[in-house]
Image (cartoon, rainbow, N blue to C red; front, top):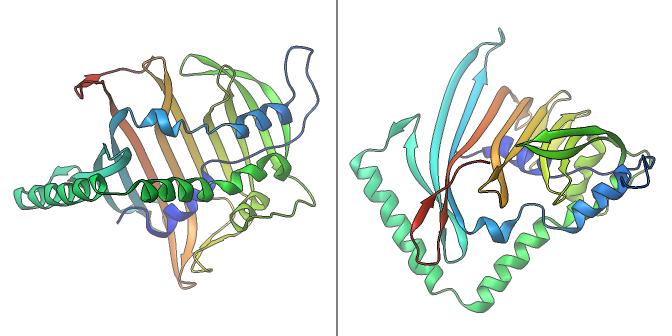
Amino acid sequence: MRCAGLCIALALLTPRLPAQGARTSESTPDAFEIVRRSVERDWTDFQSRKDYTYQEHYALRDFGKDGRVSGERSETHEILILGDWPYERLIARDDQPLSGKEVQHEQEKLDREATARERESAAGRVHREKERLEERRFIREIPEAFTFHLDGVENVSHEPAWVIDAEPKAGYRPVDPQAKVFTKVRAKVWIEQKTYHWVKMDADALDTLTFGLGLLRVAPGGSLHFEQVRINDEIWLPSEIVARANARLALVKKVRAEIDIRYSDYRKFQADSKIVETGAQ
């Protein structure tokens, strides 16, 4: 199940935004400069995340014409690090533990993947990392895609963050095909002052968003909420992602759905490979 078409939209909507704004004081950079600095770094802290395991609960809810939930399905995964790369192991479906047979099947999948990653060549690891960076290349266009306005400072997970409004910039022409989404969304983003991490974001679709060769169309009004939490006073990690949309699949089937992803049970690996419980600060 995991995401299907709507999660493609979610993945494209999640990290983004940039713009211009007036300098507020001698000590505070303007909105454009804040965003530019944040884009210069990998705000996902990908390398540091490899020190943590956690659980991800993914729920997909369908809504009927009356606005009530007409169906819901969910999966819970444990995210492990195998061969210096995340691996998702299914541990529950619809909030119920897996059967003994399913547990065995998941363990066999994990064992096969662990063996494959142990045998992966150095060239293969370099190629995998190159692909990850290429997938995020469109983010570099953020500072030119939006007009920004600094809207104050608020605390997120007890840390001060700049609040920045982002509106699509008139006349912006995307270079990377994935960057086309920037022309059709507006957002408010919270950027933590100390590390320039994007720690919270609310985004709305202003126009129809098209994904998967046009097979998925998300109507205007779709929304995305993304938030992170400070863990162990050393790293920002996701706490929740909620996306809502009216969409049309394969240009025929109308869908009104909500994707709700919650993250929990962050644990850190120590050098001796033991797992240590940590809490949000």
